Amino acid sequence: MDNCIFCKIARGEIPSKKVYEDADIFAFHDINPQAPVHFMVIPKRHIAALSEVKPDDAAVLGRMLTMTGRLAREQGLPDGYRTIINTGRIGRQEVLHLHMHVLGGPEPLGRMMPRSSA
Ligand code: 5GP
Ligand code: ZN
Image 1 (cartoon, rainbow, N blue to C red):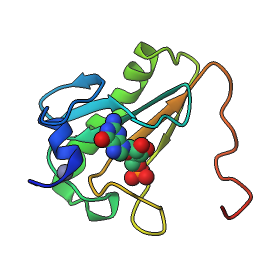
Image 2 (tube, rainbow, N blue to C red; image 1 turned 45 degrees about the horizontal axis):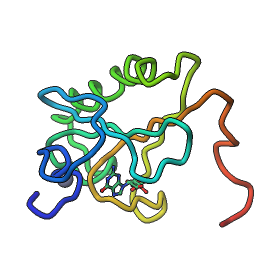
Image 3 (tube, protein in one colour; image 1 turned 90 degrees about the vertical axis):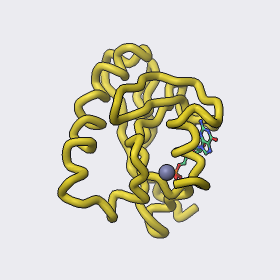
Image 4 (cartoon, helix red, strand yellow; image 1 turned 135 degrees about the vertical axis):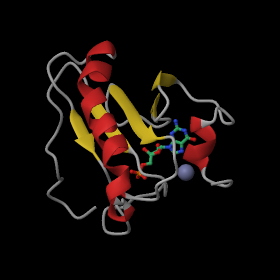
């Protein structure tokens, strides 16, 4: 996708703080971190959202999931982390290239869902 910001990051056309890269996935720190450690894992191939995945995408999705433990440990998260995939309008997905957030820090994170509607 020519105009997709995360495709451009995966191609190296927009700079990012890279965490990991292989043939299929790319991981980089979030520009606006919501926790002491906050990076994202994306497929290099453009997939708009989790709701759009096809059976052929199973391998790359599996790769994204199976890499999180190692990447989180390497980023200083030995005791766990939270993964989030926001999807579509209801999920408040802002960047329309599938991405999995990985968040953590030295202390347990806040509640998964805030009780307010903000
Ligand atoms: P979403 O709300 O779509 O799940 O999350 C999009 C995330 O992408 C946000 O946390 C935002 O800070 C991050 N983001 C948006 N633009 C850029 C960028 O150009 N570089 C990096 N590293 N992160 C970005
Ligand atoms: Zn894209």
